[in-house]
Image 1 (tube, rainbow, N blue to C red):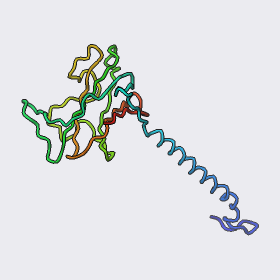
Image 2 (cartoon, rainbow, N blue to C red; image 1 turned 90 degrees about the horizontal axis):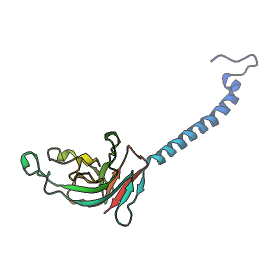
Image 3 (cartoon, rainbow, N blue to C red; image 1 turned 90 degrees about the vertical axis):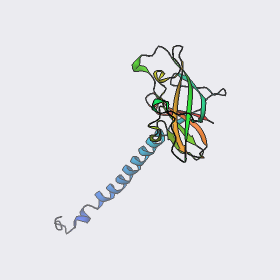
Length: 189
């Protein structure tokens, strides 16, 4: 900062109009940044796709329905030895019947991410660490992982989860992040 100018004005007096213009401009910039963050946040919340009355949801070129949602009590480890779930935990199995196009190439296979949601809103993902030594298939909607041959375009995908004992499952969620990140299928129980 220099001293007073030839008229005796200080730096503050010489720049008062510049400061008056900068403060509202700064406020507008902050408001615009906040608005774009709000818009991004709203776009980031995927919308729910509900199944039809018959329980079948059509999404990402596939038709699917929940065939089974039940505790998994028959898990095995190597050598067909029984797998014991950790204390105070419950293992769950979700089986989805899927029908999709049969003419997809290996690079066009649609992958999904399956999770379950309890009545408190907590979500649990497939392939939890607690089941790492159990023999469980990958639940990712890929026909190659299906226990049922997919020659007709119909196959199953099986996913396994672990929750604390006593938790009630409210829904199965299927998310196709590589296809559509703005929506997901929710099968209420």
